[in-house]
Image (cartoon, rainbow, N blue to C red; front, top):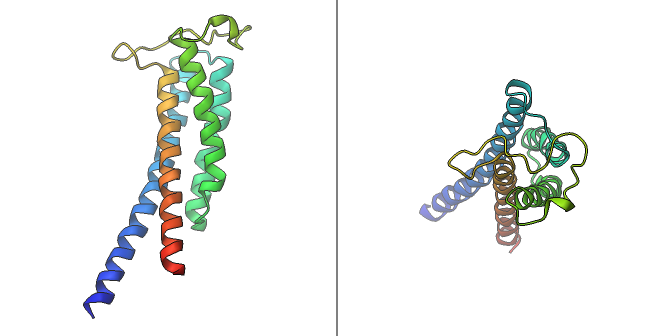
Length: 159
């Protein structure tokens, strides 16, 4: 009897951990969306081209992850990872441009706001692109860990 209870408890913990990862990714996407809206609509910082690309990839994640949660979709990572990895790549490129590691000459921002303008600089290094990179990193890692938990559960459940 104790074996079944122990198995059930462990199974419930794995389910709780995997759900926790999805909710954490969802909360991060919401925070990133509202953060970008705060900087553009309240602080009146004009988003550059790269910021727009990152927004285009972040905003839908709020809805996609929410729908995945409501549908209890075990393959939510298949929809989220492509967008979060692409967003992460753009954010990393943006950070490298802003830090001067990549030359400003290759920046796509030729009209409007400059991609290298630092509107914020919390603690001397946390800029808006760094915040975006962090948000995409958290979402991507949550989905990768969720995917690994799903694969591990599938292998154990199938064996």
